[in-house]
Length: 444
Image (cartoon, rainbow, N blue to C red; front, side, top):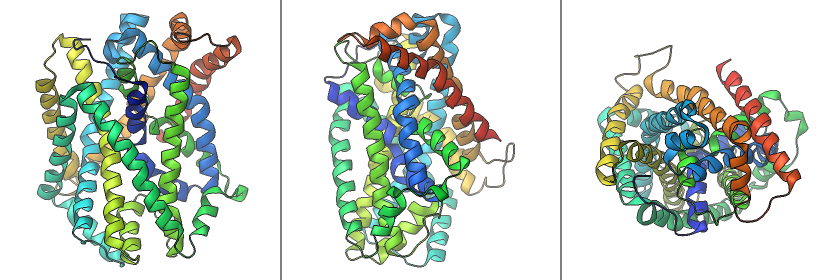
C-alpha cells in the first residue's frame, strides 16, 4: 500500500474489526428484528448462520486482504488477476454510499445523546415522541449539522492513521461500549416484569418459527459482519502474518454476536417491563426507548448512557467504511497524503449525505424507483453492492486462489485437512447460496 500501515497488536485488529461489525446493528437493528421475528427463533437462526457461513465469508476477505496488502481492489488483482478487481471496486463504492446515509443516523444518535444529557426528550407519550422525531429529521438544516459533526469526528479519527487513530480508538471505545451496555442491562433486569423480555429472547418458541424469520436472520448475519463493503479486506491488509486468521475470525464473530445479544438485553427486558410492544420496528430505539427512560428512576442518566452507546457503536462502524475508501484511494493513486484524501472523501460523503438527510424533509416526495434517496442507497448497498462484492471474494478464496487461502490459514500453525475442507465448502458453496438467498428475499 502507499502508506506502511499495520496493527500494533492482534487485540487491536480484533477490536477494530468487531467495532466495524457491531455498529448500530447490534443496538438499534437487532432488538427490533428479534422483536418482529419471534425473539428466540431469530436469535438461534442468527447464531447458526454467523458461526458457519458468516465465519466463512469473513475468512474469504481476510485471506485475500492479508495476501494482497493493497486494499480491496489491489489485493484482488494481486491474488486473482485484473479481471477480479471489479468486485473490490464495487465493495469500495458500497462502503462510500453506506457512509453517506449511515452518517444521517449517526447524526440522529448525537442529537438524542445531547438531548438526554440535558434531560430533554424523555416523554412517555408515544404520539408526542413520534412527532418530536419527525420534526427533527424533517428539519434539514438542524439534521444536516448533526450529520456534519458525525462525519467530522470520523474524518479526524481516520486522518490520524491506523495505529494512532482507528486502533487507539477501538482499544478504548469497544471496552467502554461493553461496560456501558452491561450497566444498562443490569438496570433493565432489575425492573419488575423484565424476566418476560429474557424469555422472549432465549426461551425456545417454535410456534413463532417462520421462513421469513430465518431469512431475516440470514440477512442480518451477512450485513452485521460488514461483509462485502471492502472493510474486512482492508483491515486484513494491516495484519501481521504471525496472527492466526482462524482463531481471530472466530473471536470477531463471537464479539459481533455478543454485541447483538447485549443489545437485545438492553432493550427487551425494559420493553416488557413497561408493557410496550417488542414489534415496534425501527422506532424501538428512537421512540420506544425514550418512553421507557421517562418512566425509569434516574431516567435521564440511563438515557444518556444508552444514546452514548449508540454514538460509540455508530462511530466504530463508520470509521471502518471511511478507512476502506481512503485505503483504496491511497493505493490506487500511490500517495501517502492520508489527511487530505480523508477530508476530500468526507466532503464528498457530506455532499451526497445532504440529499439523504433531505429525504426526510424537503426531498421527501422526490422518488427514484419509488424510493427516496436515503432508502435507495440503503437498498442498493444492502441488496446489490455488498452481495455482489462478497460473491467475488468467496469465489476467489475458495476456487480461484485456494492455495493462497490454505497458505494464509496455516501461516501460524498447520490446519487440519478436514477443517480446511469444511472451510472451503463454507466459503465456496454455502456462502454464495446464502448471498443469493439474501438478495432474492430482499428484492422479492
